[in-house]
Image 1 (cartoon, helix red, strand yellow):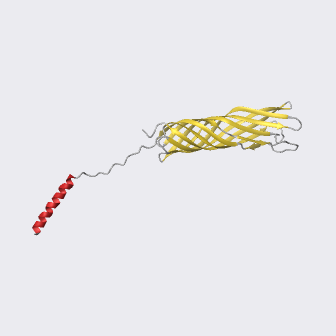
Image 2 (spheres, rainbow, N blue to C red):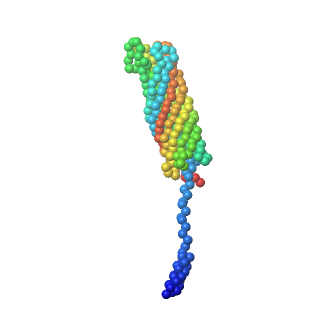
Image 3 (cartoon, one colour):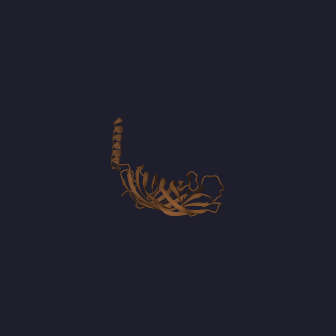
Length: 247
C-alpha cells in the first residue's frame, strides 16, 4: 500500500509540474513615465490686480510758502503680455513685454496755512493711464510644474499731473501737464502649470518713474511744481503656453 501511495504521489506531482511549466511567466506591468513639464516656449496672457503709490510734491517757487508734502494715489491695474521662456535644467530665463492700464489716481490739498482757503485751493493730483514694460525673467523650477521667478527692466507710462489754485483774491492758477515718463520696474512671482498649456501666477511689481516738473501761470508769474511718482502692485494672471510637455 505504501508503495502504491508513493507512486501515485509522484505521478500527481509530475503532472502538476508539467502544467506549471506551460503557464506564462507573470511580469509586473511597467509604470508609465510622464515627461516633465517644459517651461520653454512662447506664451501669452493677462494680469489684473491692485496698485498703490506715492507722489511727493515740491513747490519749487514757494507759491504756497508751505512745506512739501506727499499723497498716495491708488487704483486697479491690468495688462496683457507676451513672452518667451528658455529652460536649462531647473533654471528658466525669459523675456516679457507687457502693456496695459496702470490705474493710479489720487489728489491732496496742500497743507493748511494762514488765510482763507476753498476746497479747490492748492490741490495737486495725478492720473496714470497706459503703460508698457519690457522685462527679463530668471526663475527656478520647483516640483516640475512650479516656477519661482524674479523680473526687472524698463517701464514707461503716460502721466497726467495737475496743480490747481483758486485764490479768493482773484488769482487763478491751473497747471495741467500730460507727458510720458520713463522709469524702471522690478518684482517677483510664483507660477503654476496646472495643465499642459495653461499656467496661473501671482506677482508683485514695483515701479519707479522719477520726477517731472510742470509749470503754470498765476498773475503773470510762472510757478513750477515737481512731482515724483513710484508705485507697487499685486496681481494675478493666466497664461497660455504654446507647445506642451517636454519633447
